[in-house]
Image (cartoon, rainbow over all chains, first blue to last red; front, side, top):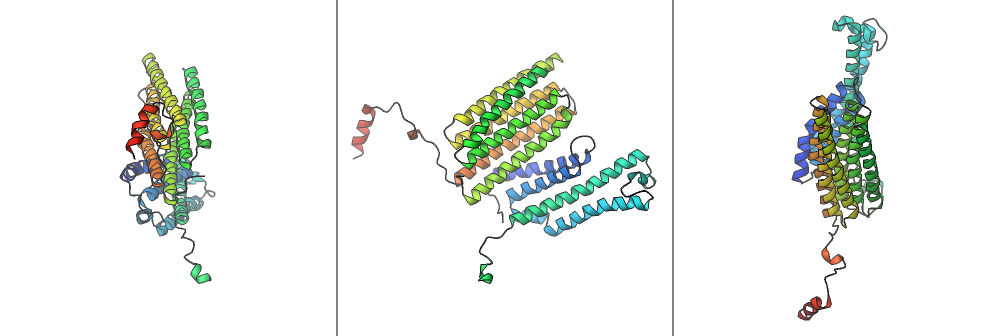
Length: 154
Length: 90
Length: 120
């Protein structure tokens, strides 16, 4: 369990930097078609912001902002957005993940519908990746001290 | 101008080799962490100079920003871990 | 265009010189704390000047604004990392380097005689 860091400089700088990390992660997700980026990279950078908060401010405060239950729900919501877009395309008459079929729903031309469909899928991927990375971080850093359960085995 | 960028880039690579000496032979873990942080900083500049030579700087800016972030967070996590366990000699 | 190129050359050269100085400090200083001084301060200013040089080369555009963002972030983050490392070293009780560790060339027999007599 990570306790609070007790150092003013590192805590203040982390508090200054984390909003910019989150904004930069959203920028990376949105510009996936134009520069290196996309869903997976943006999700990892978002999780890096949470890791920074967890290392400098202690694990309890980070849990208040992103509990494990919320992370589990968000990962499922991300996968649901991805699969849901595919099934929406089937409902509207195309194949699975055939974004051209979204023209009737979004009232734009076919290439723009493809671009917007890819953007929606990337957002789902970023949510799922961020939630899973946060869950991995929490479960690795809350390994209990060896010796707590030994009373029951002996 | 391209020649100048190439010369500075090659000079930075030589400096990275010097920092690698400190990263391998440092008597402590913290010396090695200082060496790795310095190597990360120089890698940032080498990436941007490569982007300037190939005339595609916009692509390399995003990559170097992410690398600066990861360098910072990794250094902090390592310092925190060493402070908790107290094992300095490796 | 020529003014921009000259500005970029000047700033990049000074950044490169500072990098060389900081690396020499990292190699030659006798102690962890002084090496962290060299890395935390020298590398930060060198990165700042080099990135400013690249931003001047690209003029007034979105590219230079992003490069200035990276420069400001490095200015904030690198000294903080050095501070965290030195605090970890202090908590782990790594001893600092003092003057008595070095073979002091000014210590002669006349200097040390009076001191030893008064210690009795």
